[in-house]
Amino acid sequence: MTIHHIVLFTFKPEVTPEQRQSVRDCISALPSQIPAIQSLITGETVFNPLGHGYDEGVIFLFESVAKLNEYRPHKAHLDYQAFARPLIEGILIFDIEAAA
Image (cartoon, rainbow, N blue to C red; front, side):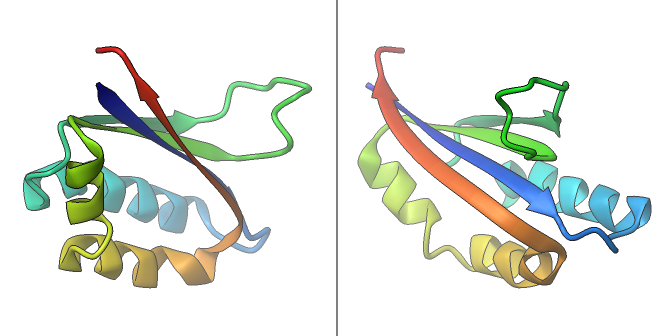
């Protein structure tokens, strides 16, 4: 079973386009730093009236819950969180297990 780790977030209003891009760049670099990540996709929202105002989304794929649990305490993940946290106003994280 594949684990889909879904992260949606909203930037604070004062965050610049350059800061937003820096967050995207950090996210995109994570698979090269954390072997547990099978793959990821990330991008800006396409307007949806049911989107609850989230600006960005990321879907990480992990081959197992064990791999997801390797990712969570990894230094690169913690460094990313420390960098992005001051720029983010709201976040939603949702994990699902699905057939590959």
